[in-house]
Figure 1 (spheres, one colour):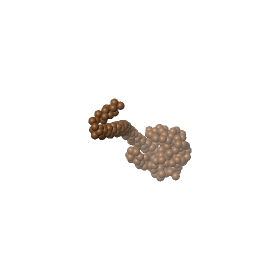
Figure 2: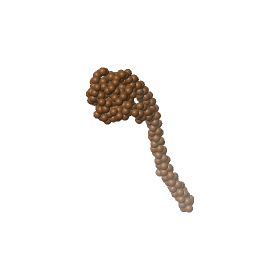
Figure 3: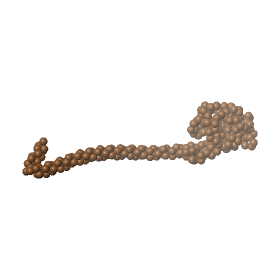
Length: 261
């Protein structure tokens, strides 16, 4: 109010009407300028507040992105570490697999020598032997005779028989009549039965049944075609219940497909 009285005093103090009008004009100009300045001030203040809020939002977004990047970096570091652990485990598993395969190859050669010693001097077929073998179990063949490539390690190894995927405890039948020359533990083959069928067409034939859970016959026992010699298991170097079946000619593995009927 004092300010308005001061302005009024200035106007009333004019010496004449002309001076009064001039002073009134300038007072109005000053008032309008002040009004524009105040308006500009509040507009600028509002603009600055908006920019301040925008900067705060951008800062929070930046911090959020930084946290996300840090999280991704942590995940990447953990992923790299996990990959290294998996590679190390795979290499360790591969070494174990190759060692097991080498052991089975050595065991196969020992079986060859064992059969050759046990059948030396035997002439003609063993009583009850026909030279034509029946299926030892009823089930799908999961691995064939011959060379096979490991699906992961890509290593090439010789498989000396046929594998049949059947349940643990499934009865295993003698493929043909003959004499048991081995019934017991056979290294990586686990619980194993080997039956000598004698000399047929000028060559000694034996059949081998491995990874059994139990054995029903003994060494020196005569068995007939289809007689139960044991039960399916997963003993020795085995990844699960199955029957590993071999046919050997003069102690050496041959393809069972040529004999199974």
